[in-house]
Amino acid sequence: MSSKRTTWCLVRLTYYSSPYLCRTLAHFSGDVVLYRIVGTLSEECVELIRASLNAGEGEILIRPEDLLSLPLELLPEEDRRILLSAVDDLTEDTVLKLIRR
Image (tube, rainbow, N blue to C red; front, side, top):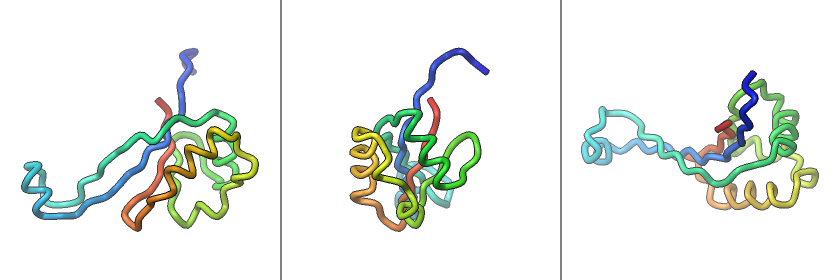
């Protein structure tokens, strides 16, 4: 294990499946995924989310249906604010992911 300290980033993944967009970006036909970093979360917050979703080690995917099982009242205030701002405009083509950087 590395001694280098890392942070957990909350990333919003939005899936686009548009032939026009694929041609414009000179991309093969198929989905295009837009990654947007929303903010960073504390280790304590990530461990609470991991426990509530029964997620393993590594990246954590948070689907819209998973949001109801998150313990928002137990999360630190700053982390809760970041998570709620990310949830505000979720669509059916958007998911949240926690990645270590």
